[in-house]
Image 1 (cartoon, helix red, strand yellow):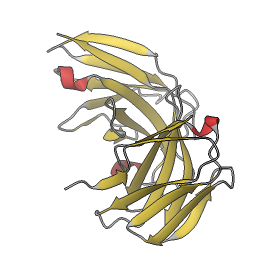
Image 2 (cartoon, rainbow over the protein chains, first blue to last red; image 1 turned 135 degrees about the vertical axis):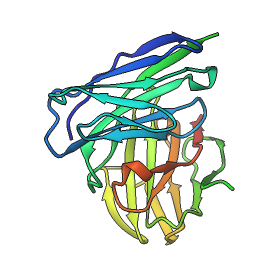
Image 3 (cartoon, chains in turn purple, red; image 1 turned 180 degrees about the horizontal axis):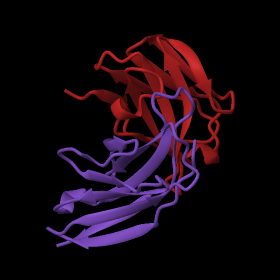
Length: 111
Length: 114
C-alpha cells in the first residue's frame, strides 16, 4: 500500500471549513484514498473514500488531484465535535492485506 | 445498541499476569480484527479472523492468543504481561476482509501494565 504524509496538527475556527491535506505520491492506479477519524477515547470512524473523482457525503467532501498524488478532506462547517485525529489511508479496495493507520493530523476546532 | 463492544474499557495489572479482553459484534460481519495503538498513536493490526479462521497474524509475540468461538466474538488473551504491552487495544469488524469502507471499531481497552 502507498505511504501517506499528513501534517501532525492543524486548527480551524468553529463554523469555518477545515481542509486537511494528504500526500500520497506513490499511489497506484487501483488504490483508493480513505479517510478515518478518531475522537478522543473512541475507536476510529470511517468518513469517506474515493478513487479519482471528488466525493461528498453527509460528513465531508474529498477532493483528489488529477494526478492522484494528493487529496484534501473538507469538513464544510467545522464544529467542536470535529476535534479529532484524522487519518488518510491509501489501499486497494477490499484488499486482504494489513491495514495500517499512520500518525494522522490532530485537528483542533477553536470556539 | 453498540455495534462493536469490547470489555473491559480499562485494565490495570501487574507484570507477569495473564489477562483477557473480550469483543463482540452484532453487525453480522464475517471478519474481526485486533489492533494495537501505541503511545505515538500509530494503530497497527495484530490479528484478523474471517469466519473464525485466522487470516492475518502480524508478527505478534505468541504470548498473545486470539480466540474466536464464533464469528461474532473475537477475544484476546495475553499471557505473562510485560511493561511494553501497555497500549490501547481496539477490536474491529467488517463484512469482508479488508473492507475499509465498512470497518467498525470498538471503543478500545486501555491496558496498563505496572
